[in-house]
Amino acid sequence: MALGRIGAIERPRTADEAAALAERLVGDLLPPSMASWLAAKETESRTGMQPFPRVAEPERTPEMMAAVTMALTSLSEILEPSAKRRPELAVEIAKLFAAFNLYTGDAAKSAAQVEVWGEQLGEFPLFAIRKAYRWAVRSEGKMPSLSSFIGDVKLAMGSKVLERKRLMHQWANQ
Image (cartoon, rainbow, N blue to C red):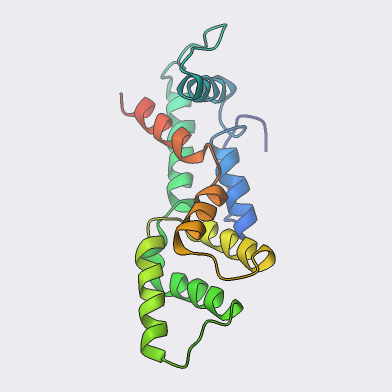
C-alpha cells in the first residue's frame, strides 16, 4: 500500500493487527499533509505550544475528504464498542477469570462478575480488551483490578488513535 493512500483494507485477524491498523489509519495511511497536521495538533495539545514551523490545516479537497472519510469509516469499525458484540465480550471476560482461576463454584456470582466487567468494558473495542487480557495473563501474578485492567485496555488502544480520530472528525465536519 502506498504511503498516504488508503485502499481496500483487509479486516485484521488479531488484536495486534487491529491495534497496528488503527495506529496506521491515523498516521502513515493518511495523506502526508493530514498526518503532519494531526501530529502538530497532538504536540500542541500536549505542550500548549504550536510547533515551529507552523503546520497548516490541510485543504478540504475532494481527495482529502475521501481519504479522511475512508479512514474514519475504518476506524469506526475497528474501534466499535465491545458492547455491540456482547457474547464475544463475555467470552473474553470469562477467559480472563478462568486464567486466574476465579471460579468459586457459584454460577450466579460468576455470571454477575462477568456482567459487571462487561458493563464497564463495553465502551472499549474488543481488540484492546483482548490485548489487555494477554498482557494480564502473561505478566500479572494475580487477577488485576477492574480499574487497572481498564487502564491496560486504554493503553492497548494506542495513545494517539482516539484523539486523532476526534480531530479528523472535527476537520471533516467543519
